[in-house]
Image 1 (tube, helix red, strand yellow):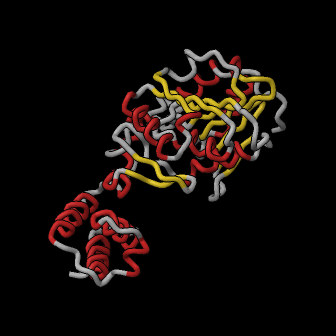
Image 2 (spheres, rainbow, N blue to C red):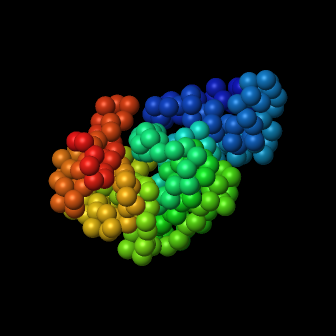
Image 3 (cartoon, rainbow, N blue to C red):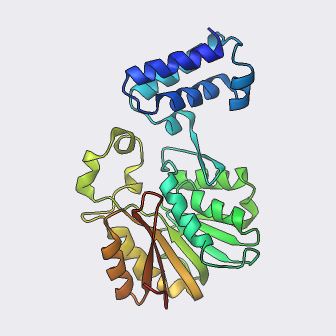
Length: 283
């Protein structure tokens, strides 16, 4: 079978299995199984799949049909136009989280400034690494409770050329930090515990529970972060957190209780996605 025929056959199989993104998933899985780029597949699609390639592709398709996300199958995903490796201890970076990066870049900080950043619950390191690529003189610290996540984040910093400006350490949010930081960012777990069972299988069964479960009302991590971070902010510093679509009012109240005013940035779908906090920000 040719490579192009294998892609078409894979797309048909995934579509028949109810996969909504069958064509895209098929292309990605074919490229990964055969070690091809998109250009390779377009220019040399008539070449044979080969026995080993067919075996790898068959195994990948079986995993996808069983509900495993493509990103987990290939062990990597793109965020902010950058490649990130994944592990069982990290979330798959999602486009919505790019709103947080955009909000940080929109703060008006000097692009060449030596900013000090902290990323709480860094996971794959995608937020911190993305910001460091945009601010070439900045330095950042990523914290996570998971050793596996820290190993993955360190590898991603190296992969994207910012390892000399990024450090990753084990920590319970900001409890062990001394500051000051110009920017603190976090995409904490914010899903209420009781809701997790009703999530799609791709999330519920494959994303780490530690990165999803925000406690009974989904706000546990925010309460901890807001109790710890204000003392760490440099003059004019900011705290940015990603939130769930229905958490804007709760975060505004929490921010006010800790002496911070807040404004909200929406994602491309128009949902509240990021809360920007610091003294003196207009609501």
